[in-house]
Each structure stands twice: as structure tokens, then as C-alpha cells.
Length: 97
Image (cartoon, rainbow, N blue to C red; front, side, top):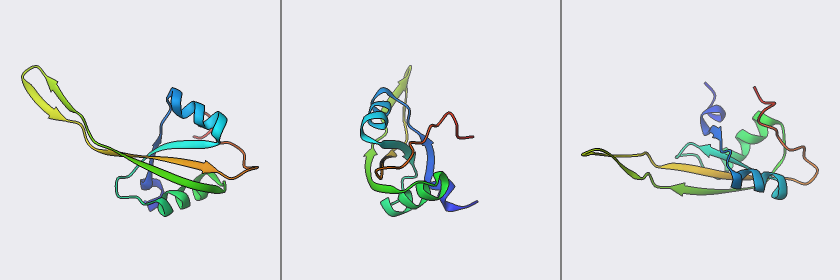
């Protein structure tokens, strides 16, 4: 399988990500933890056929969770904010199959 499909795991669809998508032309993705900004930019451009202006990333640490007396930990993950260039058509995730 090609690396670009391993870099982008899934879109993040929350109230905040919907707001930045509609008002700031920014898409939000859950990405591979070892992916860098250039790999994320190339993956979005090749998969969705759009021009990317900038990429910002945020690392999230997994939370400790308990189930009764047993304790576990959720995995760490990385989120990417991808801003599209002016004039680019915004991606609708409901259309992507």
C-alpha cells in the first residue's frame, strides 16, 4: 500500500473542525504519529487533488482510563490542520468514498 494512505488515517469531524473548515478553509485529519508536515501536505494534495497552503500539527497524549480496578492507557495520536490555498474547492467528506 502507498505511504500517502498510511499518513492520513481519518478526518476529524467535531464542532471545532467544522467551524475551521467553513470559516478558515482548514481541514482536520488524524494522521500517523511519525508523519511530518511535508508528507501530510503531499498526501492531501495527491489524494484530494487540491493545493495546500500550510500544515500545522498537534501531538496528543493518550489518557489513562479505568475499568473497575483495571487501569489502561489510550494511545498517543497526532492531529493535522491543513489549510487550502485561496480559490481551491473545499472537500466534502460525505462525497469522498
